[in-house]
Image 1 (cartoon, each protein chain N blue to C red):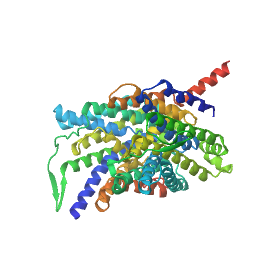
Image 2 (cartoon, chains in turn blue, purple):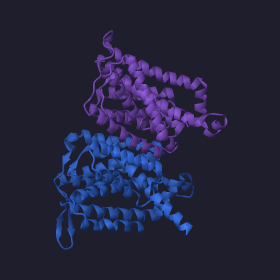
Image 3 (cartoon, rainbow over the protein chains, first blue to last red):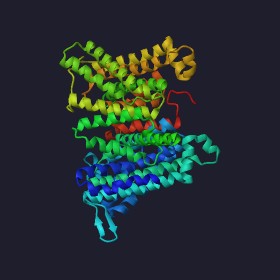
Image 4 (cartoon, helix red, strand yellow):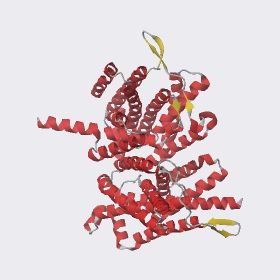
Length: 315
Length: 286
């Protein structure tokens, strides 16, 4: 839980920074951090290399918006519908993958295939999803606050705090989860699955649990993302989106609490803070990725932790 | 109707042999270096653009352009291997991420150099053969034969020559192979460079058949990986068969089923194979 203290400066930042551009970049950073935290639970926790999180992200935004559109639900109830959908989908896919004991590369490929199928459905079920053109989202989430009653989240500052609080909650949840017996069982599976099974851990059930939790968190990021940008399109479910989140986690540090957030900061904020044309921005992104992976194989947080430990030993 | 079906099957075979050449690279690299080179599609893109540049702009004869394209892809592969992949041997996830970084860089460089406007190369071999009611465009037949020849020769080389025995010995037990005098570092670099070179060759033939866009690599690497798994990773001749099966499934599937889902048929097939025959279609039971 100590890791959460690092978020405090971010709460104070809007007092100093008034530029909307900067806050917007940070909002995207927070949203993608939530996605990365979700991925870190199933990969950094239980060691399963899933490629399905972008699909869960997209299903989150589509299901939330569609249930608002067709059933007239408010945002949070609409998101609840999305959670039900994502849990069902995760259980079906997880059940297939884990029953057939797919591992590592093969698990990645099969989850990627399922994610692509979801994307193709979003792309081609035009009557419901409006296909490639995507859907405009004009509604905004509402929140009940103690003094001001029901507020619509519209202004950049409001979104900044909504996404930051969401990130804090998700991070606290992931920190608590990883320290609990559930998290320890995840680690046991990651470190040696056969041994974990011998010790009486129901590996099938825990892998399914990790997969489902991570997808629910990803869908939360997706729901907020769709409503923040005001636009939902099939590319939310793309393989590239999944790979981006994986890159963030690896860059920040696998199996660390703060890693996904740091990774998202570097990969989302950094290319935007340097003034560049769009094509070069992608190149810079690639260059950062290559350099960090080659120079810091344990990620930024892993390297920092290693340095701190060495210093503690020296003194 | 038969004309349409046969035409689609032929389209599937030619597209499938392009998947197959990437699948061959994927299979070889995975066996020897323990990583999946997701950037292989980019070397195909490099080969395709190089061929287009040398034939249409520099006005070289086509065979010279293809040779130059293969050399350029191989050199690019050598640089990528020495600068990047050398450090990610046997680390699947890091290899994957470095490949993604490389994809981002090469794709944006291609965008800057060639823009998003699709490029169409002038026809190299015009005309077609007619067999009864079926017409076969000559270029497609030639391209298929050349790709099949490369895959076949690679298989022959790897199963007959010393190099092939060394490669397979390495794949079975790296340490024992090293003790028997196999230059493992050289072997790993060689495999990466060779897979990039044949991907570039695939790109050269792609340039004769389809229009070029900077994003073409991304599609082909996904299909290539799918084909390699379909056949069973490590199976060289299977790579061609896997690619052709995938290509035909897609092309014929889109005749009878909604064509918007053409990418889905291969995926469903792949998932079924992985669940019921985890070692691939042609792999032995493990």
